[in-house]
Image 1 (cartoon, rainbow, N blue to C red):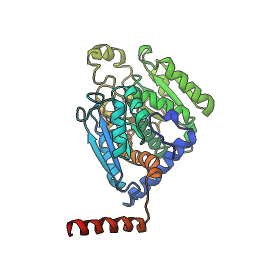
Image 2 (tube, rainbow, N blue to C red):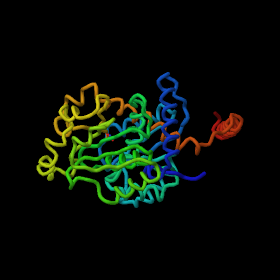
Image 3 (spheres, rainbow, N blue to C red):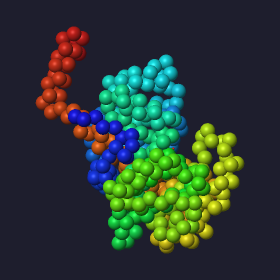
Image 4 (cartoon, protein in one colour):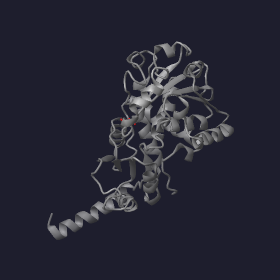
Length: 339
Ligand code: CP
């Protein structure tokens, strides 16, 4: 069976991404009826985190439990990841013990290194470049909040703010799926040429569009969804004064900005959010906001991704084969240990 990782949505065709979302919706429907099938019975997931996490950590662990499997939380500094043991050796060892690895790594090269050496699927739980599991969840959430009369290919998504790892992933998945993506940010916080080139290539194939502007008001005029993310992250503390000056108040998502958007336009955020910075409380807690539907969908999406990658690889022995081995082991224990 071909080994596939989930490192970048660019590694998947539009049809594969749509199939993954359709699978996720089926599993979510089952979950809502209280009958999530135990498709990953006895499977194990190693979760490596080089950075803190709430949603990614909890959603993957709960997903494994509800699918009948088990997750191990390997927190920062807990394993020899590139320290006292090479990255490749860690990946090879884990591959002999677990069925799937999910990692949140500081550097994108680290997840690529893990995937290169691993012999089980590796899932990217966020790097300094991208956040693919988040954006599959985001598209699922948009589908569930589709404006009346629109199809996926009609959707207009506007991201306001810094060119973060979430921006790169959202821009790439939307353009790959034939959607219409706008990014509004000051010039120096717009995405690098390499990301733009990939998104434009996606548009050529999918019929989607890409617009990058400095004007947030123009950017939201036709938006079905307005999305934002933190203006700074761990390690960027020294840049806070400069970034605040560049983004505030023009790029804050507040009710004044929403006045320029269509009446049906919804608000999204990958979370965690800095309330009062990139978005106001008023927007976060308004009827426009679908942030908690989005957060919940991380759980359903992780289930979809895990089943997609792991289920086809699991051995499913017949009851006869299981009985055969149980019998042999019990006979051995009886003979040698008298039990
Ligand atoms: N959105 C997201 O990845 O959240 P966490 O950092 O809490 O995992």
